[in-house]
Image (cartoon, rainbow, N blue to C red; front, side, top):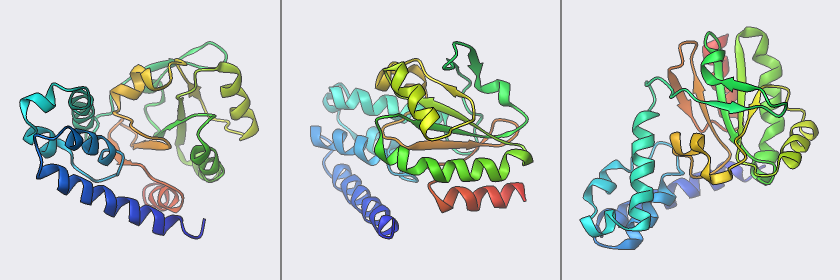
Length: 214
């Protein structure tokens, strides 16, 4: 925990360096791959890189993946209306994101097998308990493929908010819709479904909720 802020800073610097390198080599397959890795870092705009790639690289596997991420990032940019979706809850009910309209909502992408997600969960539980009475809610979106492990993790980590999953892992339509390349990842919405922030971890999430709900 004590070195996590330094780790995040290092990862952000490394992603920026990779993106700068990729911009200088638009005809390299490596550049498309580096664009995908850079897309996991908040506040990095990868659209200019995709636009600069040669036609051959855009047509490659990594180029097509990068295109999907760029298109999703445009549709889920801060200030836009979050794309609506629906998923199946652990008890088989269909839950739509739009059903939570009127509350500030955190879309939380996670999975039972994701150790950083599980380590982050106590902090998420803390902010949920602190702000749920002030119009804050969470919609968990799991990348699990095994229902039993998904439900077990929800119970173990005491995640008492709504959850959905199509049990398709990285092939989930919701994951593609939001351009998720790594977890944990979250998206914070206002009462009207407008995206306020992304990838808020630990203290950042609590600070943002204090700002908008207090």
